[in-house]
Length: 211
Image (tube, rainbow, N blue to C red; front, side, top):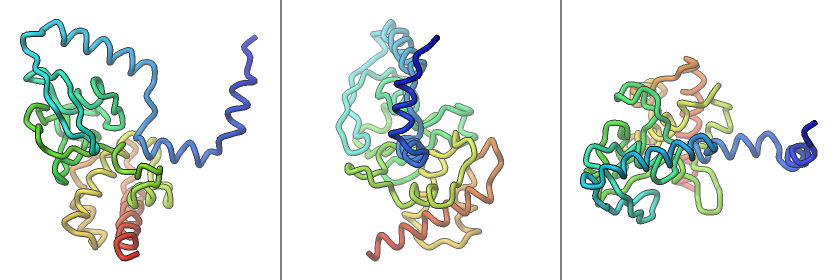
């Protein structure tokens, strides 16, 4: 019979809100399956060594050196080589927006951006939004405030798209924000609730700017 004491002790030390906050800050928790897949993907790609080259990327404010194949997408690099699994692989063909990241403050579908084309640019994924002290970005806090997602698979993409949109329109109407993030899809189709959370994020951002 399995020993559940450790599990129970951990559960007592963590509130449900702490767990949700952690998921929002990182997009998702890396699982052993992802780590295993990462090692397999890297091994397969390394076999074509002649097609690889070492590049330096600026990701979430840090310089990262990584071996990148010429045809490799930024999403593949982020998830399977840098371990940043917050950006989700949904459609893998520029339709759902779950993989959205910021490149020089502009939202991009990372599944359709070749990694070698973003050298010298500033890349921000969902993991780079919270402060070093763990304080959530105002848009992430908006998700917390409004409980804005159901399964949250699409959440990182919506958050990143909203952060990018607010850089050009910090005080949008609900209709303007809906149009601005319309390139992102939700599998649960809870768009009204998501938009309410993103509007709260916009409000939080304005308050933080004028604080």
